[in-house]
Structure formats: C-alpha cells, structure tokens
Amino acid sequence: MNKEQIFRVLLAPHVTEKASLVGDTGNQVVFKVASGATKREVKAAVETLFEVQVKDVRVMNVKGKTKRNKNGLGKCSDWKKAYVNLAAGQDIDFMAIG
Image 1: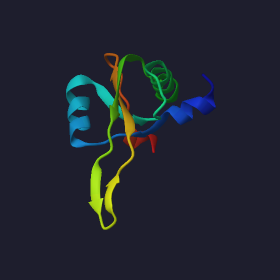
Image 2: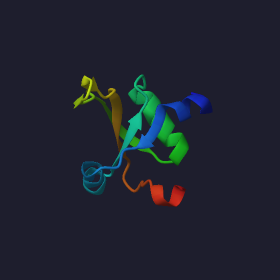
Image 3: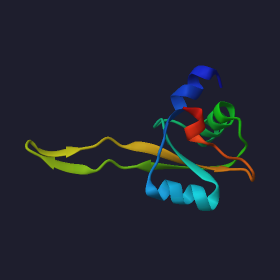
Image 4: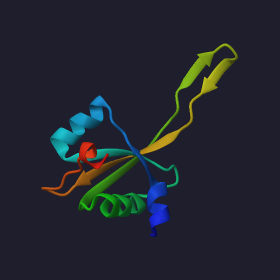
C-alpha cells in the first residue's frame, strides 16, 4: 500500500459522545473511512500514519438520513466508519498531532 492510498483511506476521526466513551473504556478510536475501504487497508493506514499497533478493526456502513425540505424528501449520503481497537499501551492523541 503506497502513501497515496493511505491518505485516501482515512478521511477524518469521528468525534462523538459515543466514540469518546468507547475510546475511554475499550482503547478504541473511531474514523470516517472511504466507502470502498477494507479492514486490511484501514489497519495498514492507521499503523503507518500514527505508528501504533492495531489489534482489531470493525467496519460498518452508516445509512444516510432522509430529510424533508421545501422540495420534498432529500437524502444525506451514506458513509462508512471504522472502530479501530489498539493494542495494550498504544494511544493516539489527536490534539498533539494538529
């Protein structure tokens, strides 16, 4: 996997209340990833970008919500997120990176 593909796999960290709770209790980090990304690609991208060891990756598709607007019904786009379980003693600090 080359550097160009690595930057296309991980889109952004997904920071929500549930993601922070999972991060505190289970040593996990949640990322928004490309819709065509696989578990192996996500694992390789996280390990090379953040220099940590990844124990497990869970990937899920999130369906976009249907919203009502003045033109009728509209739909937000679908996206994919990945729960990355880090090895014991590993940590990703997003505040120190930026």
